[in-house]
Image (tube, helix red, strand yellow):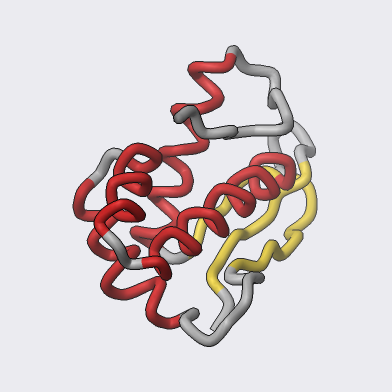
Length: 117
């Protein structure tokens, strides 16, 4: 089964975009916060919400689907053992996007993606 990775193209070829977003979601889970542009933040948020939902499932099937998305066993372990249990009673809305303002170099709108609670 292929994952629908992105609704926005972000000015990149498909393979580059998918690899970038998968890496960013892994970084978000690893560091629990991520600073990026607003457009990328919205896409990372979509993917992270789905990954956390997989983590809440907790079955071997869910773990394998998460590994197919994230490809880093340490990140998947953290997702299932630390991150997902925090949101057990929550029905979605696991992340927030905080807008920061324009970046100094090119005035791109910046944002922080982080976990709620």
